[in-house]
Image (tube, rainbow, N blue to C red; front, top):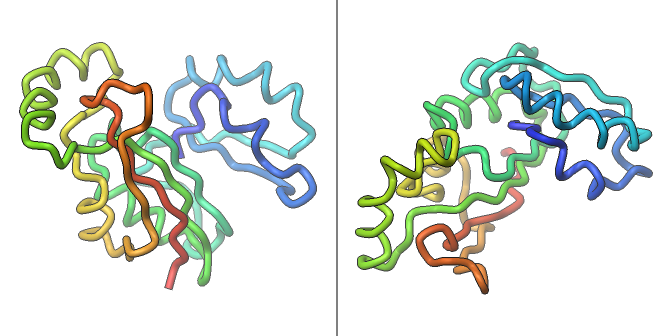
Length: 167
């Protein structure tokens, strides 16, 4: 979900990953990924669509990977419901996202800078509570972790990540 420039592609285990369908609505981001795709031997196809309406049959995907995308999807709850729909039984959802800070002072700053940040960050919302959005969308967040990433400004540095198995 949000394949973007293909930054994650080199990290896939080429012995286990047979094919990837990269959902990416932006044609310019798809174009940026071409070099990485040429260097990969994984069978690949783009889906030019939004995550809120994934044009795939239900229960057809083994694993969904989503990195730094839920912050900019207009309706993340809808996207997560679609992710849940396309995942096979016992499928896996792997994600990492920055999230609303639990620190009141940092969160206040996030709220103040968010209107400008959405312009700079291509729609990125700093104040989304990713764990809460996952929870209301039917995902069990018990196996998630969070922390401020070292060396990152706190207003963008609070992250939540995890591997969630579909029930």
